[in-house]
Length: 191
Picture (spheres, rainbow, N blue to C red):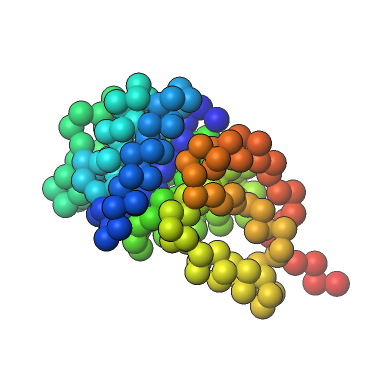
């Protein structure tokens, strides 16, 4: 892993531990000499993550669609800020520029981004590690839903191995560094 994409909220959330975790992850990325790829905002968890990564010496690539420049307050102090025409182009650039993906707490956008990356992994479109930084058990219900989908026959059990979960940024990055991609195809044998 040389470049890690982080999906997270453009808000701080209601618990100060979310913001603290964003800062801790950014610092850990810099400490390890990893590049941060993220959504390009200067506010919320996104801004705290980028600022702490840069303070720790990490290069930071922000990718933001032109229609969100004002709403997410594009960060003007990054190593590189790329403006895209659409959300689809934003996600494609982020995926192309990254060797791994982490989801921190966030809303619909964060959820959509990480589930799309998991889907691409399930379909064999990439073999990059995906992690959930599970601050305060934020992703507990989603991860339980994934198990429920296995129980109901919509996800194959080995695909629960497409992602890693930890509440510690350092432990999560360690686990992702040692992650081995699944070789289980998406489609269930109909025989």
